Length: 211
Image (cartoon, rainbow, N blue to C red; front, side, top):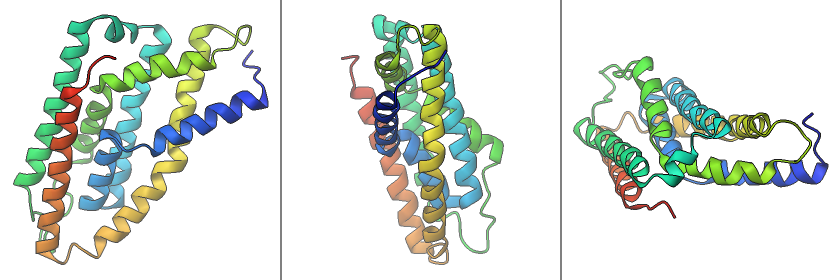
């Protein structure tokens, strides 16, 4: 069971690495919290995003992601919920511009809220579900075990690869941002830039199609 060739793993891990390096709402959310609230918040946000991605892995393994690919109504519902949520995060960032001044507490948002929002950012992205549905089956090998088990294994390994890619990003982003927090004007523009990014990502998500 789970017997694969070296070429199989080389192709899979190369694709998984490229996937995790591709910018998107998930990475933007993690980096936003790293920049605004430091390493701890960045790692909490990252855990939330990974949990949301794991939801997609489970759904793909169970075959439920096919519903999004076959149902225009289901795809549109999840798409617009996700887009609206990203826009809401962007508006919140704009409203909080300059909030993290030196004399104010940096952790204005609880770890639970940060984690939960990360889960939603990843879980409410139908493109992620469709990606897993299209990507993972390419690495199913006849005779290597039940299809669902193979899909689950490879989906989890994508998250494992993220564990090597994203933590260094969080670390460096938080270190860079620490030097900016003493400057209220820079912090304010950073908040606005992050807010604009989330709004743009929400608009882009709302515009995508199933194809």
